[in-house]
Structure formats: C-alpha cells, structure tokens
Length: 257
Image: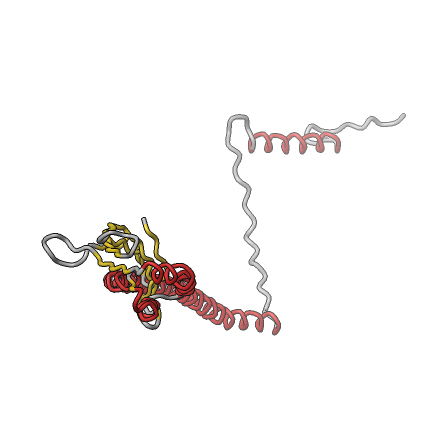
C-alpha cells in the first residue's frame, strides 16, 4: 500500500507561487497608477547632441566666397543706384535745357515778328507820306497839256508813270488827245485843290503798304479850246495808284471818279 504524501503548511506548490507573484505585480501596478492621480513623468532621455561635421574644403571655399562676394555685390548695387540717379538727373537736366531752348527760340521768334511788324509799320508810315507827296506832284503834270508843246508835256508826264499804265498813256495821248488838242487848240491846266485857309493840297491815302498806295485827290481842271467860250472848270475826284520803284514812287493807274 502506498504511502500518502502529506505536505506541511509551510510548503506551496509551484502553481500557487506563480499566481502569488502575479498578484503581487498587479498590486504594485495598481498602486503605481490609480484613477484620478497624475501619472508621474517617466524620466526623459538625455538630449542627443547634434552631430557637427567638420566642413570640407568646398563648403569652406563657398562660405569664403560668399563673405567676399556680399560686399562686392552691395558695392555694385550702390554704384548702379548712383548711376541710375545720375542718369535721371541728366534726363531732367536735358529736358530742362530743351524746354529753355524752345522758350528761347519762341522768344527770339516773337522778338523777330515784333521787330518786323515795327519795321513794316515804319515803312508803311513812310510809304504813306512819300506816296501822297508823289501823287500831289504827279497829278498836275499827268492831267495837263498844251497843244503848242504836246511832245514836251507828254514826255514830262511819262516821267511820273510806270508799268503798263505808262504804255497805255502813250497810246491814248498819241491817238486821241494829241489829234484833238491840235485840232481845237486845247489847253488843260490841272491843279490839286488846296483848303480855303491854305495848307497842303487835299489828298487822302485810301490804302497803303510799303510798296503800294492808293491816293484820292481832288483835282480842278481848267480847259480852253476853240470849242469852249471862255474857259471851263471841271471839279474832279481822281484816284491814283502809286507804286514804289527804284526811281521813287510812280503812278501805275489813274481813275476818274
């Protein structure tokens, strides 16, 4: 008969020991982490220092180049900015000079125009006086004749004429005036009327330019001939066109009004 194996109270089985160890571990874990309690931070690992690599020759060369290029670029930019500013100043100066040149040209042109107008005004005033005097002198000669000296009278008259009117006067006196004057012993004496109180003969300048003027004259013609008893007085208004020539002012047209 086999003997029954009896274990004392102080002895435990391997399974019981495993369960007891597990229970103790669980209890320790529950004590370490309980609801409502802050979890203690686990110790942080020490920072790992960054790895500093020694620069190679190419990197060092690039850094050295950058250190030298930076000031050069800044200097070049400053030079470019100064050049651009100088160019702007030059352009402004150029525009100002151009504007001043235009104003100067306009001023000179205006001065020239004013000077020309002043000179033309002076020439016109001079032409007015000269043409009027020439007309007063020419009218008695051109509008008078005497049958006893027609050639001399017509030649004297032609000395006051110019242009086509001189030719027209020659044809008229030769074909009309001379035959009639010789036939009827005609004598015509013309004179420019003077004011009753004396003074310059009555003339008026209708229009004038430096080289041409139209003068209105009041002319009396006293005619005698075999066809007229005594003498006849004709009160005429005569318009003479006067033209400046190298020999002075001459009559270029005569119209009886």
